[in-house]
Image 1 (cartoon, rainbow, N blue to C red):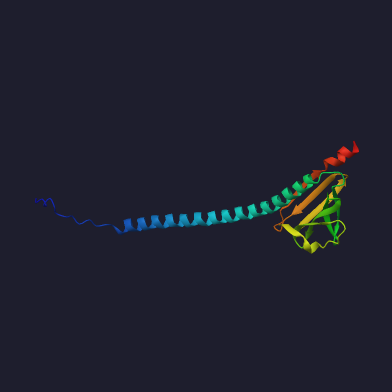
Image 2: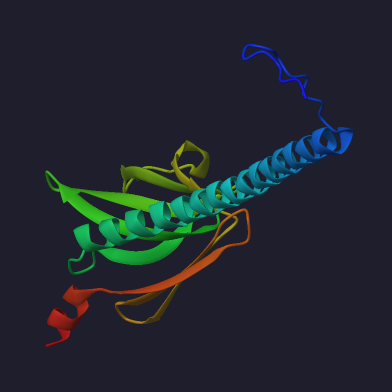
Length: 171
């Protein structure tokens, strides 16, 4: 029996099934990678959609609550109308002149308009706070207000505020 020389190269043959198995394993890896990417993109889109909806409603709720607390004085808060639109109204007195801040829904936008009590206000002149499809205010009894907001996606927020100065006035 002859032995080969130490630096003789041996010819190694690979079986086609081994190559096919490697290719199949790589294909499965790529498939799972694509599926993970698709599911991640869908989750990201849903998260962005929910965040936008929450931001719209949270912005409106925070704004209304802040305005409500700023004007918690006797006769400082009331409901009214602006161009036949229901509005939450806040009264300010500056230099012996009364001013009214109207917050109302106009063409899908929650708006604010600050104007002199004696001027004729126009709803289209307001500044947009948030885009909403519905804004309802009701005063169940003096000083107790109920708010219902709905965004364009159909998400709804209901909250209640109490005017402390009404309670103090009654005591």
